[in-house]
Image 1 (cartoon, helix red, strand yellow):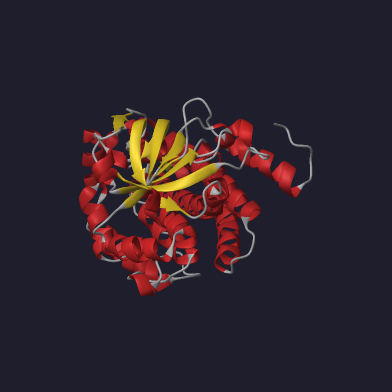
Image 2 (image 1 turned 120 degrees about the vertical axis):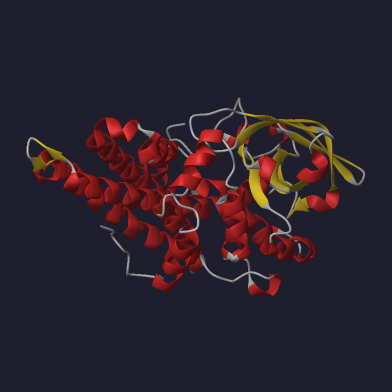
Amino acid sequence: MTFVATDRHQDLREAIRDLCKEFPDEYYRRIDEKRGYPEEFVKALTRAGWLAAMIPQEYGGSGLGLSEATVIMEEINHCGGNSGACHGQMYNMGTLLRHGSDAQKREYLPKIASGDLRLQSMGVTEPTTGTDTTQIKTTAVKRSDRYLINGQKVWISRVLHSDLMILLARTTPLAEVKKKSEGMSIFLVDLRTAIGNGMTVRPIANMVNHETSELFFENLEIPTENLIGEEGQGFKYILDGLNAERTLIAAECIGDGHWFIERVSNYVRERIVFGRPIGQNQGVQFPIAESYIEVEAANLMRWRACELFDAREPCGAQANMAKYLAAKASWEAANACLQFHGGFGFATEYDVERKFRETRLYQVAPISSNLILSYIAEHVLGLPRSF
């Protein structure tokens, strides 16, 4: 049994599903066992043009909106994959597109669209600051035609499978700015030359096969022409891209949620215990039905966030709420799926435990559920700032 979405973008959904058929559960099982990277899958997505969905046609992309991009990510997860291997390009590219110079866009966007270059990484988070981005310690000091980068980043994904990285660094000391959100700048780092020449990468082993690393910068030289936008405005540029990131993550969680609901519904319909299918018991039915309701509700908020984003209207609240609802719904669906598979849910051959680990991440990253609640409390409900 499969729940097939027929409301929007059905042709796009079917195209993604056809591609994903070439990469069945066994493929991801092997990748996960080796802690590897799904290189063949990412290349196939790139060749088909799906990772260039939001790049304008003038630069070789498809010129689609966030709505279509979320469908791509959703269907990858719905088919059993993990969009975390490639979703960075969807939102990282937006920083360059919206704030880069004409020369930068002409230089990089066509190559990103064709797959000659990958822009999968964004260096923002630091070990001592976490979500308090205004307190970052990584500095960029201008010296003639170069910036010298010194500092450290952590939990930076896909560095070893990217050619370029968006980097946030402080160009004006915190003590010298009027607002703590000022004085930070965005740079485009060419990882092909940076690694081993002022930048060191240390992979972090973690619960999910989500390639992530700790980065160390020691007098890394970046040409001044790699500054994106105005110096000192980097924090604003980063915030501009977070709404897309959170909405894309919401779509991925919706895809996960449907995967779990389909798997567990099929299983409990066939699993016979005490002479009857366990799916006949309301104690089994109700958590699955509740998960389906919550996934569908999150889906509606996803579409609202997409509509506002694509219309270039403010959508911070909607993007955050979509991510919150979808991450919560997928996690509850994962719990029901694992619970009702019993011991088999822990067996790698059923793929439930892999997807269980993958969807758990989104309670924490790219923003924790508690911080979303703080955002809504302050910016929507007008409650006093709590930190």
